[in-house]
Image 1: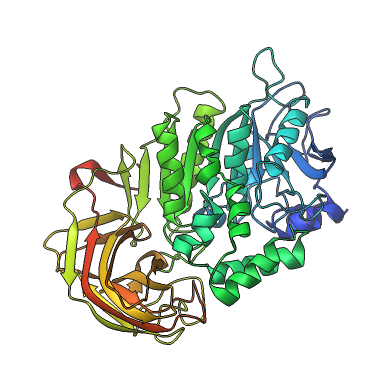
Image 2 (image 1 turned 45 degrees about the vertical axis):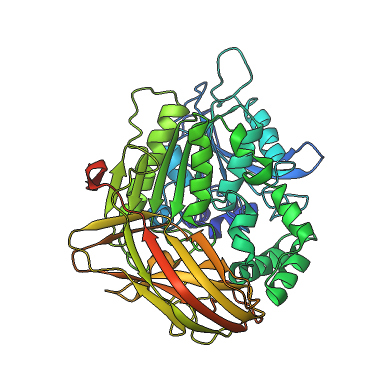
Length: 532
């Protein structure tokens, strides 16, 4: 008699319950009418014979003979498919930090929810392929075909085409994008903290993101059955700061952006949710995806929130981001999966500043105001690895920037009016140097707090052959509000723990340094209150 309450309690603990699910299963649901739909697990066979372990959880309150639209939710890397039937105490925190609306909230909103273990992970068979259109997307198509045969699944009239939406964060976001590009039965997607290409995310400007690559590859190696190319490519990258041509080609074939241009094939309405402090998949990844979708006329909305693969240090305990994300996700699914044309999906662009203030814009990208600019003659930057550079964050985390001591500094003039900086700053350098370093790094520091904007660090490729060179390059996008009298400083630094490499030796003489910060036209953005 004590078993069901114990299982019910376990089922309300995300991840823990999912790992224990093969042992305990689902809790009994009291008060369910006879014959009412029940949650169930199934081992599906994908296109190549790989077995995919999936979970079907019918909408809350669904009665015998009734049907509902279905949401497929792919998990993050290393995680099993979620099996929490009801809203858990952590749902708000999960939305606030990862941009993901969890299973219980979706079921309570009237959707069937299907989750699964991606191939190569946990109870599914096969080999982990990093969100491949040739494998993971085809697994999703097999799941959709199975959903179409389920009595609880709402279908489009006259065809075995279920009403399908998708949600998921990180790995689950990447799977959505390749799936929507290859299966037209998907009616809407909500990818959170995902990538446009793994090359631009992990090898930006030809600099190997050794911090995140080491962390993720360790997890992949220990807990999955991975593609054998992953581990040696990471080891090579950590030792040399480079990525092999073969690995770049392999990652390019995964898409969804880049030369494969699967994003260009997406027609499903897309709500993109990306983190301002995400140092693995920066705002630029979602921006590249959004620009392609909007150019192709696909209904697209973008939300920038303080979360993702990083730490929202400025706004740690404010739940506003999660509330905004839950509201926007449910409205998006209601409009484009349920087909409720009266559902209000809100502005095309919402973003949050470092103080937790959300702003709304009717257009993406924003209408620009007058840019902030600053220039200087630069100076001499000794290039040495690790010492005096950017990071680790708070002295311990290698996945974000911190104010550096070995740096060339360029500070903007003090402002006379409140200004919202939004988008990718532009940095232009005229320099010469010698040595074996291939990159220096740029970051923006809020001079009122000493914190790096969004913890973002951008690698700047340099050629140290003793000759004079000029480079103009966009930095990682940011969203930051400055009050009158405040300034920001761009730091050009010799090293970064995000892109740690032991080969960053040399000397760099900068003779001209120009920073341009894009700002929002104040007449075109609206500060949003939580209740609005």
